[in-house]
Length: 459
Image (cartoon, rainbow, N blue to C red; front, side, top):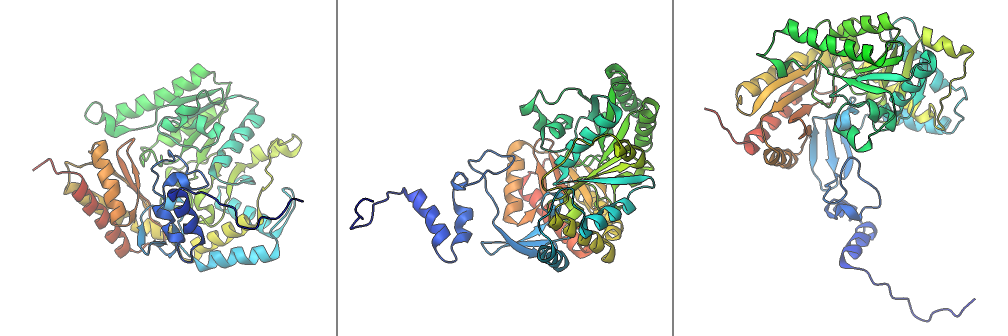
């Protein structure tokens, strides 16, 4: 061992490094992390360039509000990223996770325990008659990924259809199904995926009748299936209601047509309910609005109300029975993690006890009426309104600079929404525990932000 130093070693830090270290070691100073350059953080920020990102330092909340370390309270008109359907700081969810951690927190993927058993039974009770098994995942993307595997294993086919203007998750298979710009940096993705056009009737308004539009969209998917080889397509994936790409509610009869087309060609129909599931549209799942029964249902996000990391794939008995003898080549280390299962069980109980799905249905006409009133007063800045349940979108008439100003103004007013410059959409999806007064107040703040940031051009 060498001689010990008689004086401390000298460590030279830049001012930027010193400020970052001080922000962690000085009592009560961590709240200043939000003022640090985003590249100084020791982790990646998702879906963004790291330089210039402006993170929120969230410290808790209650109901539709959350608090940040700088002492501000935000109105959550987004349910964070669509998962906080139960609201913030729900005591029952917090206690359920604590209780489960004290009882059982570590187990094997194929072990059997109470929370896992009960949750599977609860989910199957929410599904249509004939659904028989649940495959658990860590979230929505993995639910999509495993639905791909299951469909391929069951049918022996290797091709898949999905729609443009869709999002199915961030893993490679899910991104390959995705029909928006997020897929492009990773192309070529998995082979065998073909996209077709989703109904977007506003785009054709004035150019053709609704009947002609329906025929065009139906012919598109039928042609894609035929050209790919009807006996080659394993499954058709759809968001029951298109989510982040525009709150596109399918026209009457469209999903029934897809169901019939799949049945005629031996193709499995997969409904992606990751965003729309658990009350967002005023029903437990969005497909229930359209009188169809899918073969596979994927879910995540609000399954736990955002309080745990869990997703699920629900499959019909006729699919589940295939694996009675055939090997299911799928699995995860943290399959059906006890904490996630406990959170989901309590979340389902809260949805029922607090009648949150019913609240979304009750407030649906209020949301639509308020959004239409806001549009009517600003026809030069809002081109269209779309809504179902507590899920609504403003189609804005604004350029990139104006949308940037709107984003800054919403931040200044401490209102969280989903503002998408790619399609000029401002989407609201508040927690389902919101009251009518809170809903009106939140929408009023959004309207005021639009007035402040997007110049009036009409009379």
